[in-house]
Image (cartoon, rainbow, N blue to C red; front, side, top):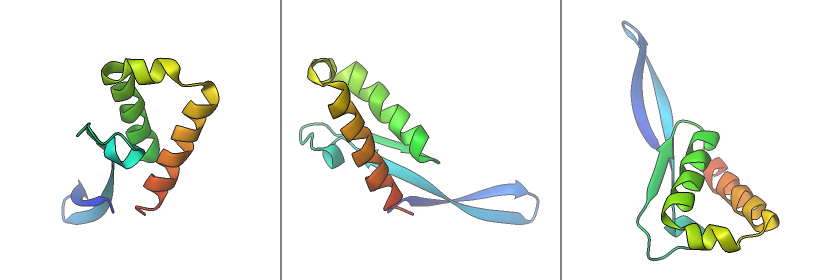
Length: 83
């Protein structure tokens, strides 16, 4: 489940925004403790792919476009479940 954050858009007006999060462990990488957070699925997915490119280039280099798409779909399902 996402983490609730109180956000003030106007004085005296508060809305609760849900921060989404996803970890490498959620995607099957048991030895990585990275966690991406963000307000939207897209923000979290971008952070996860940037992390993967930087810290797991050997894994990314062996993935086919289809596998990358499957990873994106898995991320979306996991993030959607946090709503």
